[in-house]
Length: 610
Image (spheres, rainbow, N blue to C red):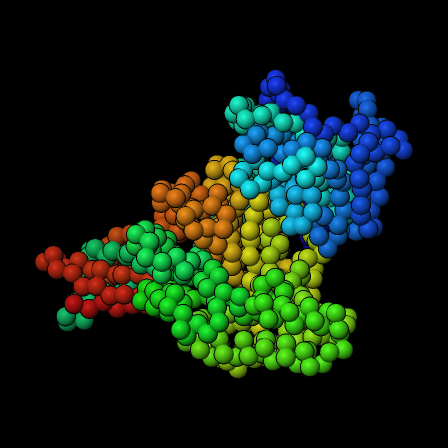
């Protein structure tokens, strides 16, 4: 499989390009502009295990930082260049991060760097954060940003960092600058490196393949036989096929606390949801830290009623998010106690029992109301509970998580159980340790007897947009495990509406074209209730954004059956249509009609009789 992945990657091209002229307006104040020389980094600090940095001559004059990453880090920031920003980062000011970059060596002849302006210390809140991939020729990267409320910093209160540990690579960086243009300039006058991706072109070859796959996997043949009251075929009758619902689950996260708040926009919110989606997940409503006994929780009860009344497919999220940051305070205290005193068996059993109780009561109480459960979430970076319950060195897929899946299955034998994680489809053109860990953990769970029924891939995108053909390769790789895949938390956090719309179209298309994917859920849809308002489909006034228009065109035009046909001389119609629920209406010679509803999941023959 690694050979197959490599073959794809070497074919990929530059994923970012310059969209504005490279000339800078006057009035900018340079805050950072290191000028390295051999043996002198000029204020830029380097850190990284299995990585080295040296200063080398730059083509055309001057010097560059050459960074060699021998092994990708567990996190992109495990290898980085950084420097403290001497000046204040001021609210409302427009800044430009600028640097030159080229790739010397990598698996796919592309380098990757993730620039950040962030708080100097925990929680490392980021004023600007942007990943860029670049090719083998020197490229000037321009990343303008405006400082928002809550993300301004005092002098020396912030740092500029370049995270470089996402891939095995040798890259060079030069002419690094941070420039302050004040608060009287239009950010659109600054040059900007635009996020793009291979396969974005309208005539990209993958689109033809996607159309073939969609016809093969997402459609079925419907034969309609029309007969009169004497069971004789009737020719030349008009038959209208009107799709009512997709078989594929297109869904969204919904905020049940908001829906129970009494806000006057709630009916508009609910209608917007139902106009677009047939599947739902409570964003935070069932997380351990958000509820105690949800049987007395009116928001949960109302959310469940909404789902049932509207026949939505329901995902449960999440039984255990195993970090002390995402559990009730008493559970976090037990984790701290065990980390300080690993031999405290009494606390260890209390913690084990608390987790098991959490899983058991919620799965039993929600049985029949939830179709899927994310049993565990984000174990690559959130594993405090496993760290203190499993023997040291136990792979996560062979430890206590196996018991959690078994308990969840006992609590609700009919619910499908998933392991959910981020960073799997959003890694761009780079294969990383997170993806390998996720594959191995899923495989270990299966081999250890855990009743796992599916794979959840979150898909929160930023500026790094994975090529559609690369998405297929990743999905193919995980499909080897023999488990269905669901995209569980899709969104794109970009300030470029055109790119967001284009990638929404292409991501949906690539996912819908893959036979092992059963669902695509977005992580919210309205900017008024979205963890990343810029990523929402609707603005705060419920006005559709371009990404919403692109999505609805696919769901209700391109992938939606609405056609009128005429019966042949044997009274039949044969048509290949999208899988889902359809209303079939026959108009008889006297103008009267007969209608039937059909749920099409495989090839089917339907008789309509007067």
